[in-house]
Length: 251
Ligand code: 13P
Image (cartoon, rainbow, N blue to C red; front, side, top):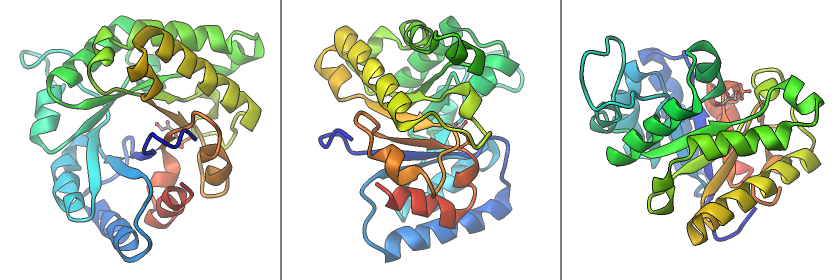
């Protein structure tokens, strides 16, 4: 891990969680405030229905809040959508954009993801921009080329002046219990770093690159120790306070 970058561990609760989950958050807050101070920034991205509650409750223990998606427009006739400004108003400081589940299930293209990231920046949020190859793309040796193209299309030019976060999430590793080897993660994160540096200079050198996909208490330490892995984007294992805390403590 690059020592000058403060690592960030973000929990993506996806479509899980209700007001009852605030109990779990309370437990996490208790663990974070009683033990040794965490060496990572801690972010929870809950469903929008409890975002405000998570942001309010988390603030006393240093837990930051994020949205899971935003619309590219600031307001308007978009039934069911939520703008970046609304997320910020609810207390979010981050927003995930371009998660593979949204790219696949909602037809989000690079162009849409880039517009969402720009909207997030415009609303004062830090976008967590997700990229990753499918299993078939990896098997055919195209993983790096696919990720490079996703980065080129999804990361806005505004990243040169504003803080964005990149999350490498191999689609085939999400929710499957399978992860790339440490060498494969290192190779991809080094490649992403080189691309960011080439495009954004110093800003690219200090951009956080998170790993996501079946990160668990059992594998977090070794993954987080890999060069250019500046934290994690955690799905399933972020739902239980004890597991998520173990991952945070692995930094
Ligand atoms: P899992 O940790 O459940 O594999 O999910 C990863 C993910 O999609 C985080 O955004």
